[in-house]
Amino acid sequence: MGVSKLVWVVLLIVLAVILVTALILPTIHVVSKQGTPAKANSNAPMPISPPINTSLNTPIYVIGPQSLTQRLINTGIPQSLIRPIGLSQLLGLPNNSIAVVDWSVVKPYVSYSTVGGSITLNLTSPAVELLAGLFAKGDLVIINVSRVEAPIAELLLSYTIAKGAGIALHGSNGIHQYLVPMLEMPINSNHTLIGATAIRTRNGVAVLIGPVNLKGLPNLIKNWLQSIETAKGLIKLPTTNQDPSYQNEDPCTVTYQNFLGGPQGSGGVYTSGNFIFLWGMQSLESLGALGAWNLGVEAIQDNYGDMFYYDSCISMYNFVANPSPPYIPAELMGDAAYTMASNGLVPLSMLGDFDMYTSYEMLNSGWYNAYIVLTGADYYEPQSTLSTTSYSISVGWPASVSVSFNAPSSEQISVATTPYATTPYNFFAFNLTWTFTYNYPSTLSGPSTFVNGFIAGQDGSAPITPTNYSPGATYWLYLPFNAEVTAGIQYDVYYDPCWSAWANTVWVVGLTASSSNAISINTAYYNLTSTQSNVPSGSWISGYSMPQICSGISLSGP
Image 1 (spheres, rainbow, N blue to C red):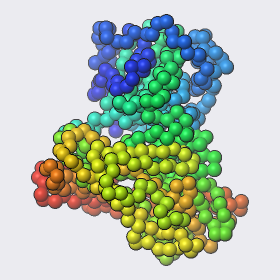
Image 2 (cartoon, rainbow, N blue to C red; image 1 turned 120 degrees about the vertical axis):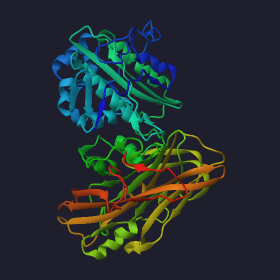
Image 3 (tube, rainbow, N blue to C red; image 1 turned 45 degrees about the vertical axis):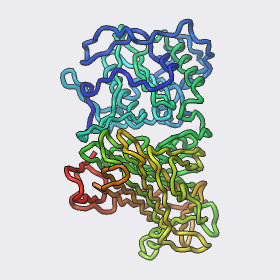
Image 4 (spheres, rainbow, N blue to C red; image 1 turned 180 degrees about the horizontal axis):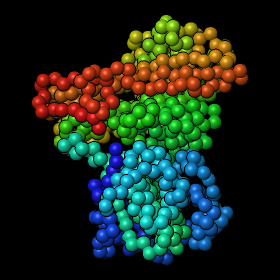
């Protein structure tokens, strides 16, 4: 899987407050083919003059050799603000951070090829997810690179900023691509700086990328900082862990972004401080799935370009909180999402389900000796409602943020808890199922995005309970998660279902307890439990149905 520099050439995606134009330096040129610059864009924004009177007192995190640090100091950046760090520490930085990275540090984690004038980037390169994570949390990223390798670095930044900001195109022919902004200017020195950032506003996302003049770097940073500060009331991306302003985002991604101290790990298993985070999307990506940072796993698409997504995750303590009864505080989160293309099919309903009942019943199989429950009968969000256009869920520790969901139409939310069992200590093993049914007052035309997130056991009230607990033993947890969508055609207030698809997945987690009651992950497996023989190649679903009432519908992998 790759992305070619010659495929998507987009001048600029700017749906933002005008202040962010301070990020673009003068003399920007646009190229449609590598090495063939066009005339200067006379409409390119000029630098703000005189310089904005904003004090430069924000740390600048530098990953690279001492010579890079010295170059920054020589430009007038106070040495006291420069903080050398390692590459593994990047995702642990606060939101809206400034990171200057030397290409020599990133290059070993980038896989690409060049044929003639075309550069193709391998989208499974480790650096892709790393940089996408930075842009998702609003960071300003600047890469120091030689003029020879600048086109490669620019393509990497262009793709990852589009992925991190969720800027995607869903075509009517089923093509699903990220829109990649490409800005270039002549490079007159052996090395150049290429800067990129994505800022969320109430009107959309500002996606900005371009070369940075070294002498203008301090003023660029000042302008960017003032843009953040001035627009803080408009920006949807939080600037602190306590800013509850996420909208229509996968709660698993939100949790990862706000993980205390910065997460360490890979393949869907992450640790930070006293917490362990198991992330389904990252687990499936390690198996070859494609993930959309703010929506979840790209599961299936139809020939109109409509796409279904899902995700699930478990956040838990890394120790047994109470020896009698023994339990490990945890919370469960997930989402089901759908992007409707122009003239696409509307989603009629979506479903998300954590089956704690089966988790408890699997104790009888002889293979599992831990299960997960709710300590309260209503410890989940959202709860049932007849009609709403928006709702919020509170993502507890360690993120401590709120995520709100605004639907393009009203929806009915129904929550089922059956079958269920009452476990020892009067806890509840629910088969907890959220069903979101949409009501369209008039014909809806795309493109539109529908995201429904949910959580069970806020602040650790969905404890993992080992049976016959003994320090030093290993305990195995089985937890199914299911997601489903039905899409169809709308005729005023009447609807015909055209296709349904579902994903039946399961978490199988091995937890090893130490003599001090600390918990470590022995194994964390997440995948589809079974699939029909006719599911489309490359899809991440268990099965689908297609009533005869609609014609000309086909499904394919992303």
